[in-house]
Amino acid sequence: MKIRCIIRRKAGSSQTIDGVTYRWNDQNDHVCEVAHEAHAEKLLAHPESWVVEGAPEAGEEGAQTAEKPTRGRRRKQEAEAGEEGAQ
Image (cartoon, rainbow, N blue to C red; front, side, top):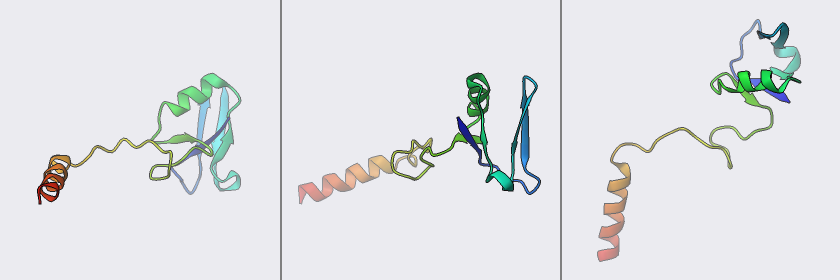
């Protein structure tokens, strides 16, 4: 599985899991092949740092976002819609 490090550092990033070192840098466009499923699971448990290469990014169609609606905004929108329907 190809995994992208979304934190780009000039010197690159590396992670060692069970004696296997994975390196992300400009030479590999911060994408690394992670062959061990358990290693991939450990990395992907931190979505702020690593994502599956080719998966939709936040804001793209099909992406899931963790953003919550602004507090009270839905009620305001519903109230405005109700006012328009009553006219």
